[in-house]
Length: 193
Image (cartoon, rainbow, N blue to C red; front, side, top):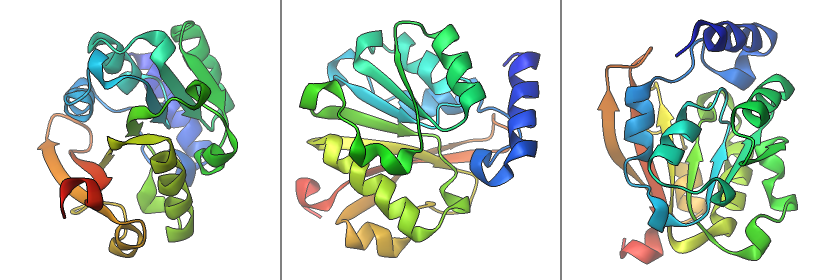
């Protein structure tokens, strides 16, 4: 990660710590863990809260085509950086809670959602709204990937139950500041659970 990314991230965190939810951008090890089940065959991918684009870069390296990637970023500074850094990727400057009011990929279902949002700092209602909108875009076998610095999945059990979702632990990396765990969120009905 570059010094300019760290400084931009720190500045955004000082402006709005609950929105950014981390002092440092995610590292390569976390990006690798977050994206390891995604490839060109996944089809369209939505990334929520891409920040400086660490996961975006990993997705592109895994073969996701730029035209199959939409980034949803709340911070105007991050959104401008992403537009400059990834000119062929669609960047939407908006709150992910408003995702249900957008039309992505001309109605083609997405294969994966990569979530870099700080759910530990959000209300259960907002998390539910974001997940509901994300799963409305996902095809039936699609998954949402998220990470947390906490000891367990950052999606409340009540939200998982309400939306008929499962949280499956993918792994943990200690090569990130701070160490983080990754979870795959998927529909229960599709997996027989």
